[in-house]
Image (cartoon, one colour):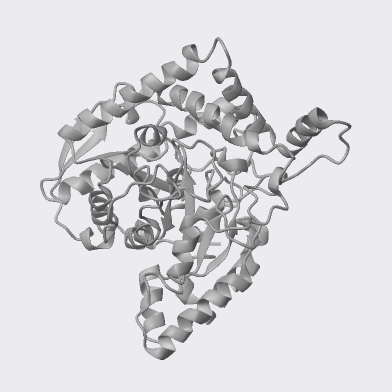
Length: 487
């Protein structure tokens, strides 16, 4: 492997500026790595070689002219395959969109291309971003680079695996209930979900619109901070986008955290934690103490209801959002329908996978006449209580910490027949989406089998700078981030 691929985005940017390597050479090195690995890893649904190399050429032209480079220019990036990139396939890893070629760019894609970031390919995911293991893709399963027999986490498993395996230096994922933070934890990298509305959702294939948020994957906190800066900002095409200035997040990384109040979430430190995760959490608490932070115990009494709330609201929104995939205007259409109703039902029955069908049915039921008040309305009221719990918690603590997941990556197929066991994987991550607050997973050690463990850090709305600062201090107090998957 080209040694430069192992370096952080910041180091790669410096190498480009110093003319140690050209952007075209760096991009080609990423494609060589993908060619070498991806058959066994399954991280990419498609590659976008022409688009990536054209972008890299522009970077080299700028360097030759001595012009200033935009942030992260020339650094190879993988784009989750539920974000539109004009002229490339955007499938959401579903048969129903298997041959859909995007006619437009998502806002985040425009921002990446505007900063001359080469997009090397579209990363595999759980179908329509529904899943916690990346086993629900209609095309192929993604494998964990640390152990190919294990899952990478989902739904952004391809994005996380590509960064952990050095196929790409950066990636974008989407997080509806932990779909960035969980794969980051399982793959031993940094994954971050911003405040709801901080990053435009225009051009992201919607799963649950009030919960979805696009965010960065990287191997260091600094790289994640820079990538968030590139993709953030107001977008008139997204009505939920926040009209606020974009911060220079990396500028806050070295602020002192002495006296910072770090809240440990009591409900996520009890039953169900594996012994290795428990030990990693105890070490993390000690690390924060050594850094001068004050540790306080925090209770989120309604957290226990978050999975129930989430699986009513998310499925209801999914039922509504996925109604557009009907075989009429785009996507898969059944070849043997006799009439219009048959075309609808057969196209959807043949095009959607079992997990997507399960969630559409759950959501349709929750929204149906006679059940709306009992389920959907009640879940919305409970969501407000979960949000209020966080408001109260942040009066006592500056940030909150917990394990990203109660366990490390499990074997492929281990939970496939038990949807409830799979849903419980997201117990620690879901509440941040319900409350719209930023959250991050950073590497926090390894279990006895050498599999990565993630520490989740949460901050109040729009306090990304505080989150990055606390995460960076923890990262640099350890060397976990320096260890790479041996694949």
